Image (cartoon, rainbow, N blue to C red; front, side):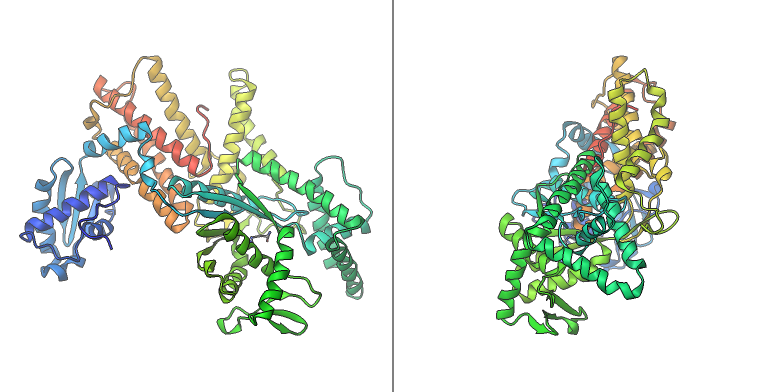
Length: 595
Ligand code: ARG
């Protein structure tokens, strides 16, 4: 616990300064006998947001202190209201009581004088960093080869990549990892179908074609007459064994076709700007997974059962986890046991985050629990970041319904839609710039749409909605940024420069609100990390943009009432644009400088 002598973190200047001032005010109303339980840190967490902005910046509920202070909450509020302004007149503008609550307004000038220069110089965000943060691995994307990469996969990519950026912003060394499913029954089905129907691979887009073959294979197997099913399954198993034998024509085919999918994935990662420091493959952990089975069968952690080998977790309601099937093959779960060991051994990580859809909640509970039973103490540092499904306005995607939006189609449809908006710049801007803006908008739109909701919830992918320049969308945020930059450029053309000489002139309601959002930004980034919830940061950036656009509609910048006010507003705009650019970067969004 933080004692009153340990300085509070300054990632949130407003809250920190205020909690220290409140502690001093408490000292003055108790003759320097503040009960030990009431520390600045405790006050820091107790401070709330008043329900409406005009009520103030912070609200302190006084109930929790009543017992320690042996006074009634409204009495405490009243005494603090009287004492607080004198403690720090530079920061405290107004204090009011509403029953047991203390509503406090800070002086915007105090915030502006710290925030504006720090944001403009870039020092604001370095406050999030701390030395000696442990290394974290974020495993994300993890597509399967021989299957289509579709719009649903983008949610994982957007969540994982952005989470890595947030961890890095907070000073954690991060290993961004992929774990590609290049082994198993799905591949056997795909290759089996290609042979069975004697299909020839096209010259281009071969990764996509494999995905198509795989989904036709599943449909064919599902639709097969029941009396033929055993024979067909035997054929597929034959293909699987041929791949696993690591020799012969089918094995060679596996190697070649695998590359087609990998090439597609790499194009997708390049387009979206996703980073991977290391790529694991299921195929490379299967041997280690066999060794694990032998090792823990011997030590008695795993037991034989009906020809298979596994671990009984029924008492914990996690079922019987099979680690080696009766055909001698290990399972998806076994490979995860091997992968976890490799991760911690090879990379000296202290925490391993797995970004994987909620369909695999049980799987990860089983894997982490099994690792514990194996005595792998790092299991407690493994964390499954689960997220909900992506559906379409017409329901769930399914190959059978033919409504799966594959990556290429997604990209092309977005580009077509955006071209309608960018048409007007043809001739005026270079083709290269237009293409660059189009890519940034498309990537930003898809990434933002995928992460702006609570990860636990299912989301509906609605292309026109996500591409809209209004509302809670990526393009709206990027547009707001570009708008700021163009105002600043225009100002410069007229030789109007940002000035920090009169930041005390930033007094209007929107200016105050913007300063408050800027003040809170670091805290929100920290919370986003603590809760692994990017929607928190999205929400904050969106709210900031809303206030800012309202400000532009109501307050003159270039035509401000005085040169001093103009300089101060331009400085605020510049600070805001830096905050926006940084926040968007954390979300994986690169806004164009103009549009
Ligand atoms: N490739 C798997 C799938 O598509 C996801 C892998 C998730 N990561 C893991 N360590 N199991 O279902």
